[in-house]
Length: 149
Image 1 (tube, rainbow, N blue to C red):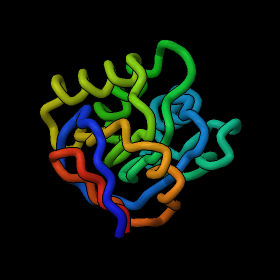
Image 2 (cartoon, rainbow, N blue to C red; image 1 turned 135 degrees about the vertical axis):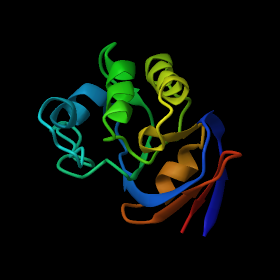
Image 3 (cartoon, rainbow, N blue to C red; image 1 turned 60 degrees about the vertical axis):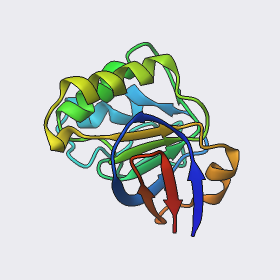
């Protein structure tokens, strides 16, 4: 097991299976099927992200460097949480961008349902993203500690 420490964006404790992207996450392209067409598993629809394309994101620990794409990013993350189709955690190797951060914070503050919860930690470092692999067990603690087994 390896332990990493990051900055808490949306606090919580969770254990989930890792799904890893080494490219930026285009939130709209990735979550479009979940938000528009009822895909409860939030299967990644971004054909430009070979690490995630056709993989389930809902309930997983989504490990990534950053988000990319348009200004809809924050709204997409908020809507995924509101619909219960969000990852269990989003774990960023880099600092979270302001658009994704806004969506995450709004979801954390406005949605009081435990089914809408998404734990988010950023600034975990490049070593984190190089170490973690699909299928590994990730435990995130309230203090921003991320354990990878």
